[in-house]
Figure (tube, helix red, strand yellow):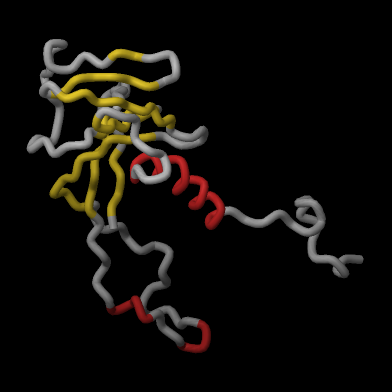
Length: 172
């Protein structure tokens, strides 16, 4: 399990991640000059750039409303174990004298990942052509996965129109 530590900076850093269709054996910021990376912005929210002499076409993918894109970095730090104040003391008699199976288990270690920056859009690049939204895993991930996750994590509307007045047939 992982815990997210918010950015330490008072003014949050913003960025636009670029997903390139190649492997670059570097992970992190690059001090790239305009000589090496100068994308042009098109009117249809696409981009064109040249990387090592090869033409790339980029599609801008917005993070859906209500969500926030975050760049994280892993750490070797662990979240300190909290006191289990919500559990009764060991000498406290539990209902029917049942004890939780978890009472004798060691608490799970929780690692910490740190927020580095946030973003509102990503640019997914393809060789010579725009990435195909039906096959590109990053475009599909943002556009389809979020909608799917909302469906499985949302509650269906109540039969009485969502007023929360109880179950039909009950009441005074």
